[in-house]
Amino acid sequence: MPALQVKDCPSAVYEQLRTCASEENRSISQQALTIIEDFLSAREIACDVRPHQPAPRQHSRYAASHDDINYAEKRQATFRRLDTLPPFPLSEDAPSAVELLARIRAEEAR
Image (cartoon, rainbow, N blue to C red; front, side, top):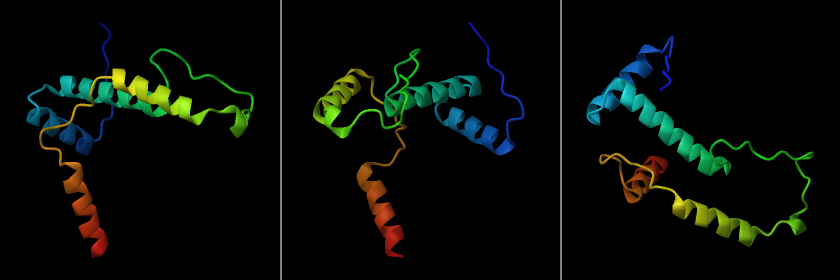
């Protein structure tokens, strides 16, 4: 199995990683790997790129006209693909959406 070494890691980043690993009962290496895997999975969803497949290239950024794109089919295909993915792991300490919205509204009201 390949090894990964990170050089010149800032102390603050290392301490955050160490704290996070401790809270989730993992080694620092296990935690780093978990974070990398989670990031890459989320990136695949956000970028609409499947693993080990380069994104298709177009000659022009605006090659397809809006008439050529069926947005409903594209949206349905995206949701079908999302349904096949495992759930994104959240910490048990993560606030709910309701709590996050309440915090944002309270900060904006100030």
